[in-house]
Image (cartoon, rainbow, N blue to C red; front, side, top):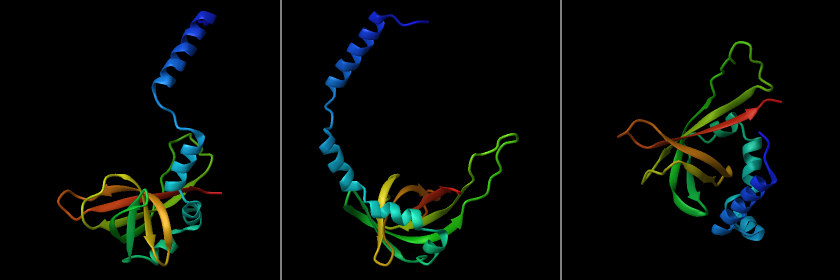
Length: 151
């Protein structure tokens, strides 16, 4: 089915109308927002971090913040390799995925799933997506998965 010029112009007009109904961030506002929550040093730590690196911090506390606002603390309680899974028959993956999981015990008010910055004086800061895990009624634990494409 070919689209007519009239249909194209109607769609373009509706897009323009919809975009004007919602305030847009200017490029400078967007960059300022990203700078508040993203630190390139955090990415470096994740990129160079390994399961063995985090194993040295088992049992140690990390301060937790979101958008530079402190929200509590957590203790690293488990570091383990991701299970190796076989691809479906006939499927050849382009690259192998490796990784490990981190499990933390939280203190205080349970936190929702979100990206948090964890800080330890010896390790530094790293931003991770933490997902609440564990059984209801037990102490709150959080899991983070670090997965990488193998070279």
